[in-house]
Amino acid sequence: MQINVSNEAKEKLKEDLSKKDSDKSLRLYIAGYGWGGPSFGLALDEKKENDLKVESKGFEFLVEKDLENMYDKFNIDYNDNFLRKGFIISPDRG
Image 1 (cartoon, rainbow, N blue to C red):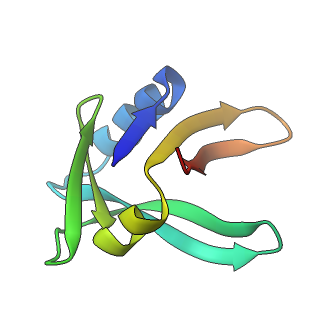
Image 2: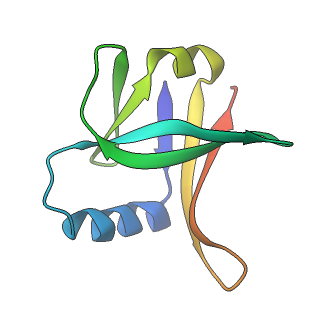
């Protein structure tokens, strides 16, 4: 599994994580389902038995092994404009 983090997302993650006093990793997970398919989220979490550990741009991501069977690659970007502000997590089936 591969996780690509844009430079904008990297800077925002560094900023957000510097405010937290935690040694937990970032979990990439399915946050829900809609008409366009699943939406994805990020949260701080501890490694569980069924997790893969993926490192990208100095960050450690946790992903359930079942998610790896559905997607080979994820792209994480950050957008900060009046229409949309936040992380954009999109899968790429490769």
